[in-house]
Length: 263
Image (cartoon, rainbow, N blue to C red; front, top):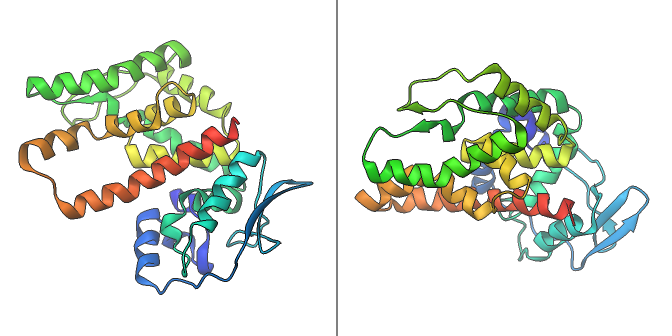
């Protein structure tokens, strides 16, 4: 079902739409040439549209792109305007996310919501390192405030585990998260929450960003406490750093869209 959460480019089947595989495939193919000169945003009956030389942008599924807030449409317009001689989808995270929401999430909202909710049963924030003491402290510093927020604002109290052995979470906690998520499940928001959840491994971090309880930058750092600890001990791998930068761009695009929906 996660394959349904990504834009339906080039007539691909759902099995081919995994975000990582799609991005890799896109980078291997020749990029399309930029075919427009001017980018603008216009208020229309169905919402705010992005125009390329006066023509409305459409999704890969041929649906008209219309956003409920002008600020959201301007994010997409800025991505189109920033393109050079070629159009590189990898540099357009908000555009890809909106295409996903319109072409995929809107039609399969319930299935997408259930897929996102599965992350709550094994959320990153619940699995703590047994050692060393400094890493334990860093995890607690970054993750405990989000767990406290989830308990206070969502009514979900999670069980912590040491190491990577799976721990069963209380049904009451999962039910509370489910109830909260269903109140924020319009397609654009749900697509953004899914992207952030998949990128961080934590639905709780994604929900906290969506609620404005934590900045997206802090959530991204929190999701990489272990990785940063290892890098500090053993050094940074250049290829891994490049992949992380690409994922961070998608994370910040999702967060920017969420913020624009509130503007």
